Image (cartoon, rainbow, N blue to C red):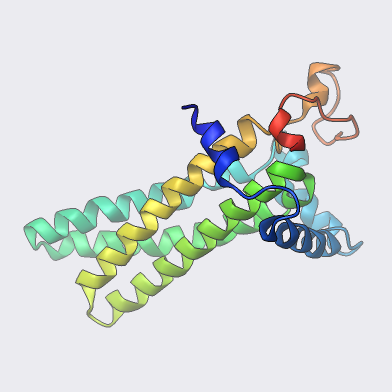
Length: 208
């Protein structure tokens, strides 16, 4: 079975509690991002006018890379008992937390651009990432208190959530087209900041 079909069958549809919650959160985020005082900051966080595409896909590489390093050195530290691995794992975990905060913000400014199935899927993507971030914060706290073994296990569970969320993130971007500027297919000379064109209807799931 195509994994995208599994996603569509698993996630609740229109009128569900997920649908209502995602609408409410989207409205709250839009209220903040559309405020006149916030617009200059939102434009920078969105990324289109700075790098020519949304910043979120690039920023997420920071926490994912850092936490992958944490997982590797946690495993090496557990096997070898070398405290140097523990130090690197802890430093990478903290760096990942800092990067995740930036990733969350850059992702939120894209949330008002989603609709229908993409909005609901983005809500789940965001929830998984938020839970994972909370788990990494818990892991960092436990490590600082000398409870390294449970801290490692919590971080490993968080890594699994990040992986699952990443799959959804790819689907949101490449199938639903959130953050993609479909107008360049009609006019490649349009500036990156121009998002006025109507999106191309490339995914039935987008409107389900």
